[in-house]
Length: 355
DNA sequence: TAGTCGTGGAA
DNA sequence: TTTCCAAGACT
Image 1: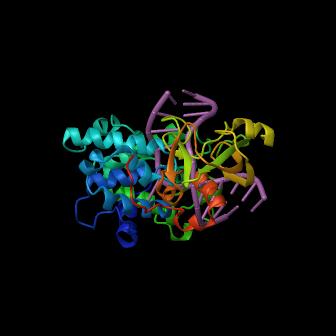
Image 2: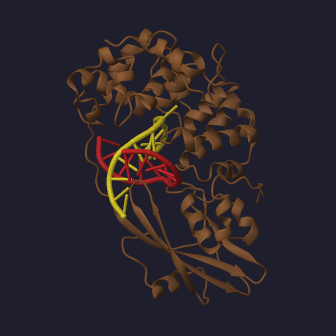
Image 3: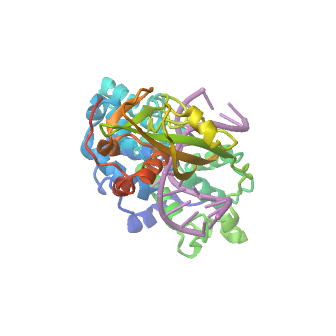
């Protein structure tokens, strides 16, 4: 059985500094812990930091976030991905503001939008010092190795959770962050630094020499290819036509150039012209490629200028479209047309212009 | 429960 | 180049 005290001693010597972490000895701010945990879902620390800093300046408290217009939240999140997180973040802030404070128990946290079993345990342990262990990718890897679990993921999750639960106990906030740090710096996916590991003596995988082969994972299906066409339509006054995507589903609530559906077969020029927002002399500008988690996307980009735009959507001055809530794939499309816009690729710091 | 849902950097 | 991966939630 691995020793929590051993891990905590290692943590006290090696704790990593991060913008959302409390200074040793001081209480953590539940708002900051929660905000960081939502952003860190399936997202690297490096990608999160600039967004976290920006959110904290723009929305210093959960009340400020709750009172902000939805479009301001989506713009601030644009580029970070998994946009349902931003919608749930805003909804959660409203509920917490109405409650007066974050719930200090697992059931109360779990009932909030965007907070699942992992995040409830993470916020519970880090912000409220509840004796629980959040099981994320790091903890899955550490537990799989320490106990030499051969069951492939995701089937092994219950087994891993059961082992993790038994580790809970002393200094919950530090123990949780110690496990994160161990997984991030020592017990890494490839080439784990077992020689430096505080749990080396207790690790079954290390004893068997199979640490790097764990955790085992079920093979994933191949990503299909999809195709679409999107349109850069400008008018004589220097406006461009944009659209807001449906509130739910892929890139829900985000802004896009008007376009076709994304299907398995490519769009011919004739098909694309027929699907354009309005008749015009369309010129093919180029192609944009983008990889999503479960499919690869190839977009043909067409451009045209007309005297007056008459189509569904809304028009914005071309120079101001940088501040729109574009997901990355759409920012790539815009960059194809306006190469200079690359400097504002991510994250957008432009002023908000509520509509 | 198995899919859906982004992104960019590392391997 | 392609694949893998990162502090998962929701349906």
